[in-house]
Image: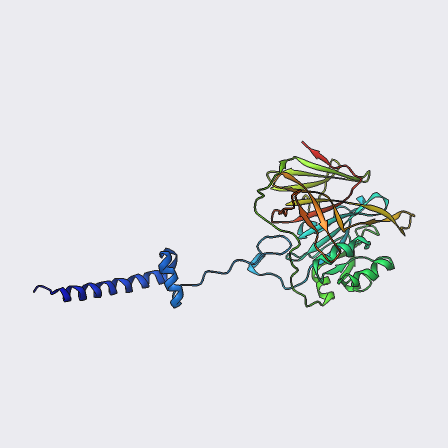
Length: 352
């Protein structure tokens, strides 16, 4: 029997309804295959699956947090020695950020800052310097572990908003290693210091910007030599195989207790003015005062290249920004960053 025009329209509508129902069922199960207008409709009626949230990013490395969870804890800074007798050190490659600062006698020391990673052995731990609170106030209510310090440093630690868990305040968090000679024998753990701090603060805010690649002006370099002094001749060389900068003291590779090379994804060289303070060590050497506000020249090493720019920090309450000559922010490669607080009187030598 022939259909009337009205019957044909009705049959067509019924067929379209059946097809629409089938399409809806299919696209509900596989929303990624749906055209844009269909996805919009499905989302409107609540049938499309919500896209998974982006993975949490470690604020001090720019990398995805392990196990898909960001630790709810503050940054933890630990002062680590770099005297030749203190090597090999423990845990430098587990820190998110490491600062190298000049100290008396031409030596350098490290501030290792942890957040996403932890370590059951860190050290050797040594005393704080006036530079430390000025650096660490950028990390919010961070926890600061160190062996001791003169009164001027200890008074400045809480003023900088830091939780003081030095060796005398939290003695149970530190141990002496009988296999190491004093004073290079004091060690701690990140867990013990976070516990001693009893801080309820959460993750710190980022202090750098990160990007997988850098689109600005940069030139290739094999590495850089930073001659802090005759006893602190620092060399960073690019390893294409490792995809990282490897550290040495002169021609001697800097290795950790487990034999792994000290490495960094980005190395920031911040040229700073350094003067002698009135604080003297036991040998009568003045402790350096490092000026961390104002501006100065800076170099950023990433991806086997160097970016020439400058650093800026208006006050100690501000973050240090690393920018190009035209003021554009310099992004770091996601991963561990070392910041070299190099005296401005030292000539930076690039390797070929």
